Image (cartoon, rainbow, N blue to C red):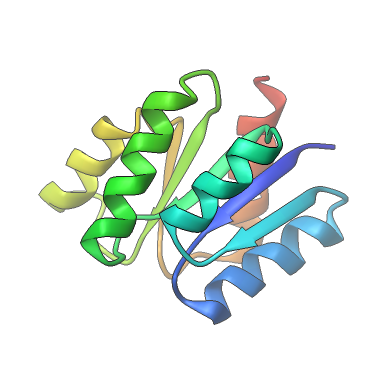
Length: 121
């Protein structure tokens, strides 16, 4: 099973993703910010990053920096913004997202996307 790093400043969403992926057998490291994610990635490796994009600006900037430092790790972008919103499109491009998932999402959809991205490793 894959090791996921989940970055979301919303505790409820972060925990929902964690529980869903762990129930499917994945290992999950949940963090609230790009700064925390950077500390994790300096200490250990992950297979996939799932990140929110609607976070404080400094946190999103850190996520973009993580993408640059870890180009081989696939990113899944989740956002409460529309898939057509320019901010979602721009973030997906900046992070070279393997997939995007709009919030609110259904848990089975999250699992399908996570498994598809992890299977591509």
